[in-house]
Image (cartoon, rainbow, N blue to C red):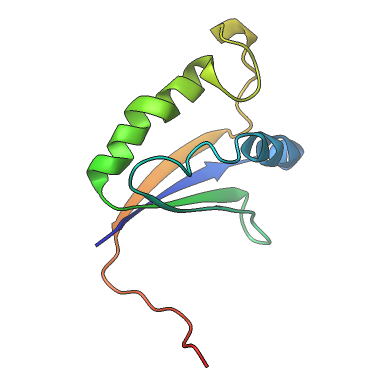
Length: 113
């Protein structure tokens, strides 16, 4: 069954718009990756300053291939805001990041009427 990666990003209030704009500008960057199944950026409503970046993958191997290919290139200046030079890249919007990994063991979908 699928695997889920959740990146918990601590984002100060003054950086929220920056983070959301950066994700919006990279829309479509992951969708064509082999094994990719789902993405969601979850904005906190109350009680936390953490955004959750939810991605679902066919396998750990598919996720790792994306991390070593397109994701690595984007974070080295190959995409998004900023230039190819590290010094030209804007500072991160998040002040901390933690990745959680899960295996999907059960799932449900709405019943069709």
